[in-house]
Length: 160
Image (cartoon, rainbow, N blue to C red; front, side):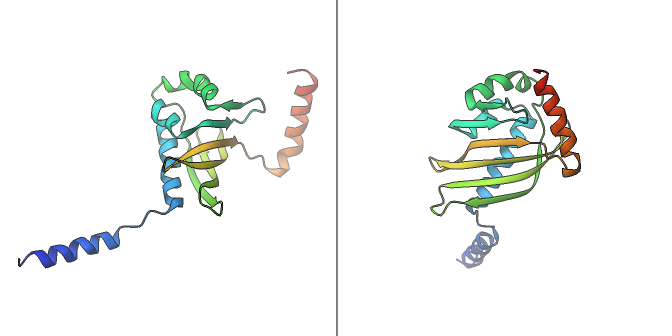
């Protein structure tokens, strides 16, 4: 019995030193895994993070997809070694009072779109956090906004 008290103390110390997972840290981990799954083209893992009735809103005004339509659109990307790579930072998560719904926003570094922003809603489904809505956007600096708005107006008027 000489080694048992010190082993017990060691185990208790290790448990106390381990950071407790909070709902926000679980959401962070889920979203980080979701982004990693896309970067290695793991389609089942990526789409497994969505709720059954999820919606993905892309950067184009026409891109509002149910999760099934988004999966169909993304299939060719997931047949490559990497679908896309988003590196999230500056993420903020907030919760509804009952803790069953949360919303978040995150800044994203992307190699093909440049700086982007993602925002969304996550819901608890069977004890897990699932993405119910994700909105990907390209933040436009205010100084460039008028020019971009004019370009969009011209394209719309030309029927493009």
